[in-house]
Length: 539
Image (cartoon, rainbow, N blue to C red; front, side, top):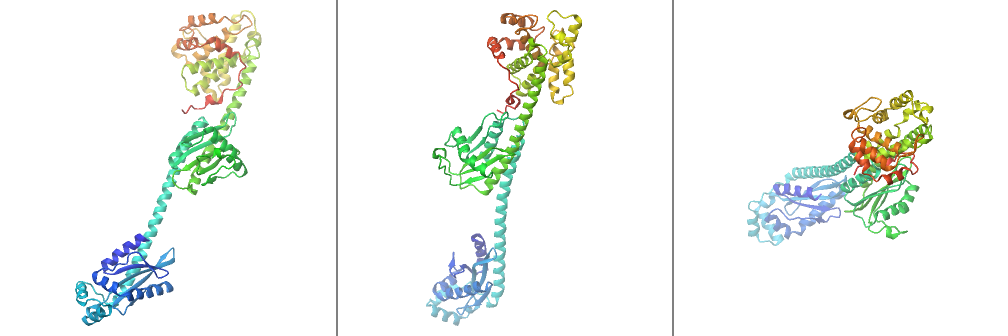
């Protein structure tokens, strides 16, 4: 109320009234200087003025309503109750000298009573506005109105400040949620997403550090994830242990936010060093996935507003993690089915067993060497895995024939790219891999099949898969011959670069350590495509 009292005092000064504020015990506080030299002289000499004002204050405090009275000493005193949240907290007092002082005889008698120099007081009275005592009622109404108006303004300003603070906090929260929602791509790596979340918390919440700890959930999360941003006197591994040993059991018992503004880790003090206060919020969907931590608020303690914000972000993170896990599980299922399908094709010919998987691995490596994006690498991997799916429509007698194929049999084999493209044509999610399957036997010089495409029409996917297919065929035992020596394979690829093979892709293959690569290809094949490669490389 100090601001309101200052503004009321200024208005009273303009009206020539002295102003003061008294508490419920009848004790005045704040500045109570009179408005002029005349009032100062009377006030300083007349202790009775203060006593009379105290009596009026006691009356107003007791009755809870405004009152006024003319004092025998020639002054008029006004009292108005001061209320805070509808409860009286004190009394505002204003006073003024009345016209009684205009009477020379009254002034002389009053100066004698107060032991004041009459001439000095008379000189000080010149220019002073003495009011009729009857004006007390009107001035009391003015004082009451001013106090009520100022209190309403003060209340409105307080509410406006609170509203502004709440709006600012809400804006920051909505802005943060919007930013995080915008970055929620199901293919994004969980660690990259969580780092974005921690960076945003660090910027918005005025804290020293933020951390996310996510429990392992293969295949989306093969191992525990610990992401830390900011400054904290703990290693990531220590913070992970603190989360698992201290917070995880608490969240398991009751999955709700934990706030501790006097943090102590009594069981393992070394894990709690450097942490003054902390908020820990579970990241949970149908199951406990992990937690978000905000550490060491830079000013004061964590509040309910902070808890609400972190909880909202944790809920968003839980949605992302649940979707990411579901996506990874579905991808894992899809790849398992595709590997099983291609394995049935390879099983038709024991001499080509594992061929589809090896072509997929070779194609993947070549796509990476060409600097393609992870999503494109996955696309080429799938096309390499499924490149021979059309052989399901080729008789086994033709596929397994040890001798030279007749022209009719060769025509049957040449139909397998088209058959494969037709089989997969009804699966919308595999639209991007069909061109690699359909064209992997085409050549740059137009001598391939089934369409006889030339270099300008031959997609990069098909160029990579075609080279991978030929490389594996030449380095593997077949029913009609043994695997070719590596030096022969290298010479064949070099001789046909520019006619059958893309020279740039062939150069990438020949620049590799092929002996080591062949050893790698002979190792047991993975049954599924690595989930991480399908996820966006956010860094």
